[in-house]
Image (cartoon, rainbow, N blue to C red; front, side, top):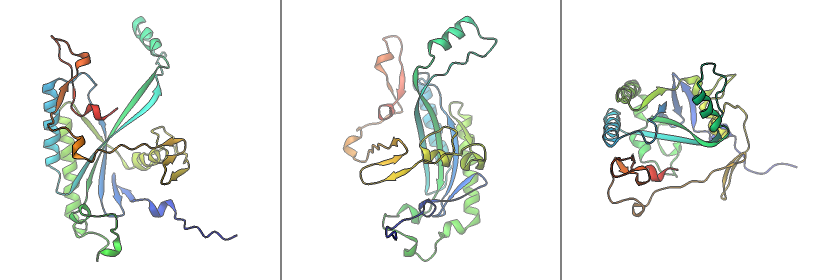
Length: 260
């Protein structure tokens, strides 16, 4: 029997074109630089430090050129704690601490930051837009060699500002960490499996009107798009009443209720 279903390859639908010099290039000529982010420990940041972190983010974002996209992404993976009992110089308390949390469930947090240089034309793009609607496949801004060089220079300045703040540490990902090698999985491969484990196996991907599934992992998406769901006023941090007392004040990020 002849297959009459309309089928497309993953390569044809994949939005990424290549990874060169540590930069991700999309088929729409967008340039993306990826960073691994190290954030301060929860419940250890004061109100004044939250203000400093917020000011550092604002200062770093201002150095980026027009039509840039800042995407901070947090991964929370449910895992079981594995103690480190092989160390020889461990004290009795340290060894008891490791045994106490042995195999207890916790959420492992990993944070990535993506800085993307797009164009004015792409910012107004709609879902019915295609390359057939414009005269040039590559936007005019990208054909300017200085534009890409200025964006890379701006991302380096962005990284320097955040690292100098002393609270947030950025480390730029290399090409091998993005695409992977013969022995280790890259960030792109981990997206295909919805897992940050060092595995290179591809699982079945199901895209339907009912659900989006990768292997046994099912995606559940929550979107804040209505202004009525947003508060009337915002701040850098808020008081966490459960751990605060009359003499001590525990501060949390204002957006923390939107997370886990």
